[in-house]
Length: 293
Figure 1 (cartoon, rainbow, N blue to C red):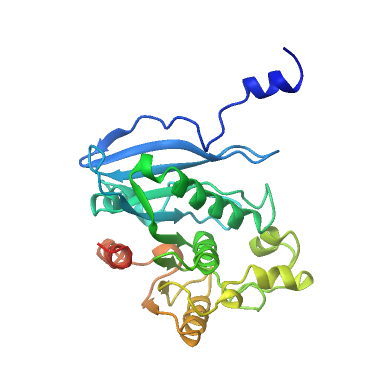
Figure 2 (cartoon, rainbow, N blue to C red):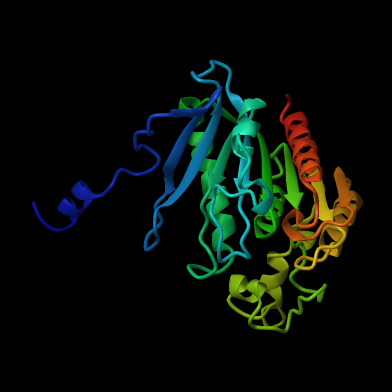
């Protein structure tokens, strides 16, 4: 056997039908599945996700889903990292979400050194499709999905929620919403910014692409509820990004709650531990409420 037939035979199973790995119980009442492939696009590394599932055994009633999107300026970051201030939590933030009744999927997406926009948004939509396809096996109800992201992940989570209005809600921590206008330290003419690397060109020289990548420009009636949380002392992503997105959502008739956190810089730098816990707890309660728990 040679040529294409052998190549097909030896290829790894397609993620749509590949066996799921066994679940491990590392935190009380929570099962974990790590490194599950969800997409093998031609010419790309396999994209994977990690899952935290409620309970030590599968429940006949599927759990709602939190789809988490990591930050890192679109060219760094790990899928299982909710940011600087949660890295030493025990239990970790995703185990806490699962213990509260929501499954959590933390997903890879192609970074800006691998592919330009809209590749990362396409990857998130592919992850949602895969989770829906395998939902019965996983015990996950993607009809009750809340997307949650921080920083660059908040930007992508906003775009996913606006592209998939059937989602139950969106929790956005200090996410960019506008790649077309100078805000804070960002200028659209600069070809060396993270935004330019995401687009493959300075936003000012690719205005249509910049607009397509700007959540404020994608708002339309029927958007799901948003919780936008942003520090008023953010030196990396100006607070006006969240304020503008909240205003656009409200103007379109959508529910948008803007929570401005006094004294908070990016990634909740400058807050004490109790304040970070409060931000997380309120965000989790929003997610649980929109997911029907």
